[in-house]
Length: 144
Image 1 (cartoon, rainbow, N blue to C red):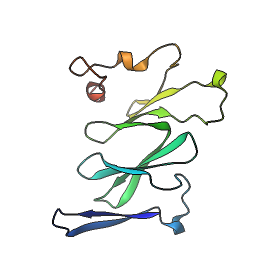
Image 2: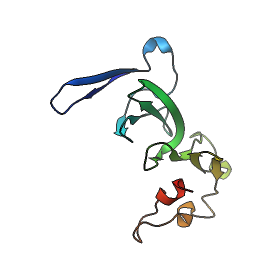
Image 3: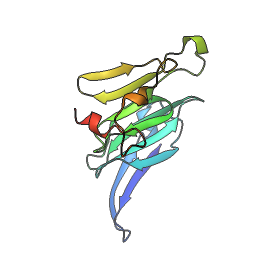
Image 4: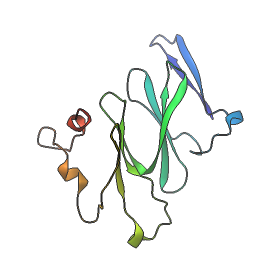
């Protein structure tokens, strides 16, 4: 699908990492829609599978390999402060009838695989600690 390239500010090539070459026959995202650094060594590569599902793949650039991926309902994915974990809206097929939808708030963390919340009855972000009295923050949750 792509070759991920890291360089020094002066343009010196540091590393080239193949990402899902065609011969690997990996299914998932149709093409890369975005890249973000989430730590000193990891980036997240993301792209859509269909109208409602996005795949986020974390690539360890020093090791030169994909280390994990998540299927997400829309573009609702966030890395922990150190980039080692993720919180995201769990995958729901876009054709699921509205009455049968049960959105999931998912945390990639030891001891807690998936936390399910019925978002029509409660606001899961209300329970999260607030940063400086403003937007919800997952920072303290990761340290629990």
